[in-house]
Image 1 (cartoon, rainbow, N blue to C red):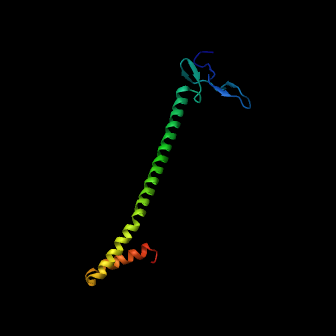
Image 2: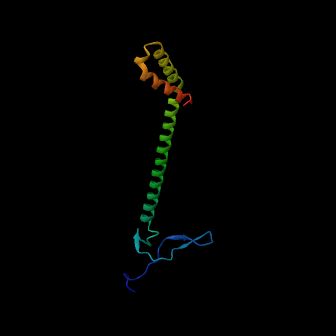
Image 3: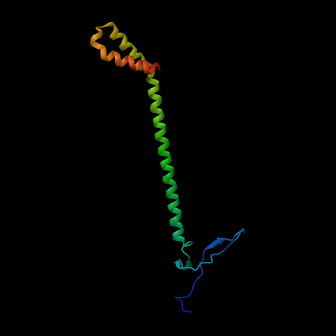
Length: 126
């Protein structure tokens, strides 16, 4: 046989089914790497490229999960900040309604009704 048509076995090793040992790959080596022939599955640069792509995808997934978790934590912090302001805002609205009642009522009618509705809503009465 001439060298160009000769089938060279793959230099890769695979786990033998049901055993704790490896055996030589049964495919023919069509790709050469560092003087040895490998099939497409065991070609070291291809294996490395697949491994690197897998690691990169994993890192991208982790970064996405972290970004989502950070956004959720930031949203929770903002909700807590607003909730902490609730008593102060309620008292300010009550003071506004009280001031409107004490002054010329017709002059502040719209503000009064808006503040009164907000108070009722905040207290769960509306």
